[in-house]
Amino acid sequence: MKLSKILTPLALLWVLTACAGSIGLDDLAALDIPPAPPAAFEACADPVKLPDRALSQSEVEAAWLTDRLALLTCGDLLGVVSEYAVGFPAALIQAFNNE
Image 1 (cartoon, rainbow, N blue to C red):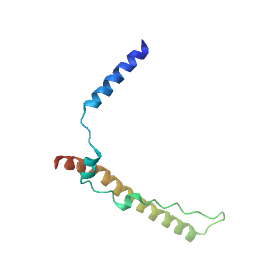
Image 2: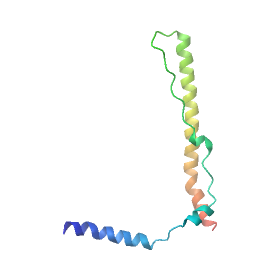
Image 3: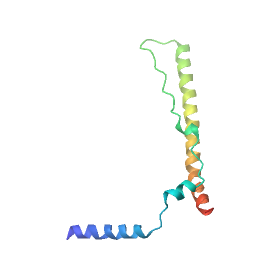
Image 4: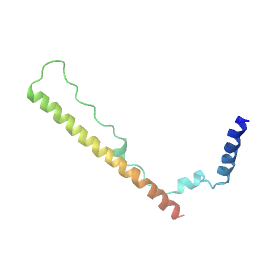
């Protein structure tokens, strides 16, 4: 009894999704969706590895500056990715409306 209560709604959902229109692979290839920018695939820099000894103030400042610049660059890369992700649904809508 319990199993039929679970399987019946699932079967109905499967039938309903079969009725929905789908996109063929040829249709997807015809869509004019811009590719992700190359910067989206760049990895962020690793933090500076500090030696296992006492550091001078200038060494600490140099390591901090390197890490800070790497964080800023990584933030810029994430900004590029998020801008692309935000614009992707709009590109899909535009591509489907131009058919």
